[in-house]
Length: 159
Image (cartoon, rainbow, N blue to C red; front, top):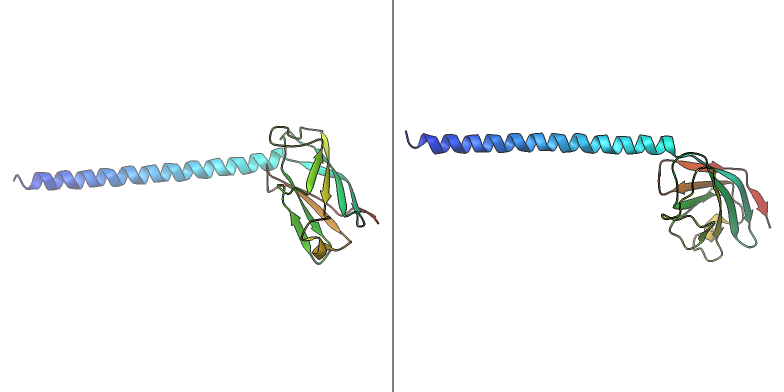
């Protein structure tokens, strides 16, 4: 009879360990799903900005945009995508070719109803040759909510 007790104890310990593992895994999975779904829906609902004006000078290779924050979430980290109908050029928010006036950073965000002028200098940008001298669509992305972007096809072309 003495041999059965250690076996029963081992089986019970294994059963308890498996049960705790299953419960912990389920809780963590549900918690992660809840956190990511709330962040995405909150992000999309609270983020809205628009491109007020767009000018592209093919001679100086400068694109100037006026961007206005129209919602409650403060935003920063702007990137630009240029499309000429056959090629898309994606300039990341960390590019040294992008300047903002006033400056918008993680510590100085674009508040509601504030505007900034984004200037993209394509003079030394390696992908400029692929986009050429005409831009038909400009899309502005942001680092805060990557699922929200502003897009315009109204571009004043200057030469």
